[in-house]
Image (cartoon, rainbow, N blue to C red; front, side, top):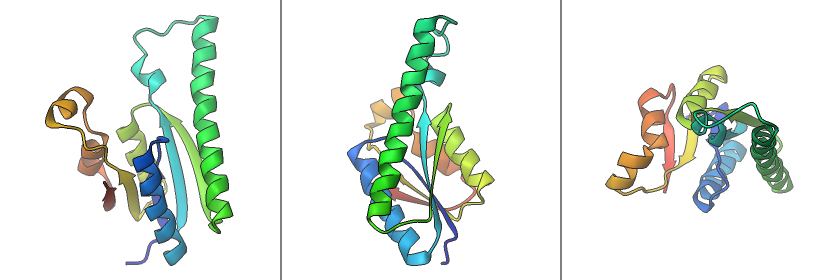
Length: 145
């Protein structure tokens, strides 16, 4: 299989770092463009509590800033490891929706993403981003445990 574009969502966790290593390896081996995606879900999830106050604006900007910092640090680390065909994307909203949307927009050949091994009860309350992405993905997904 020849990959031209790989999407790898990250959240700063150890397991998403493992998924990123797999995505970077596949990108190097195939010459594929690697899009590293971070989705800020907190603002989306807090929509019912958000007001137009200055405090909420500060919180919102802080969440976005931390997302940008995560992406910048990740991209620098990948470049130091010899990978140069990297793009970083910061999005806000529902993570599963944004992962599928960027995969469609970029005509991705593969999504490499971590799965957080929630218990069945955890999935009931937390939902499973990987389950929702898998159901709607326009391309294959490599699950990393």
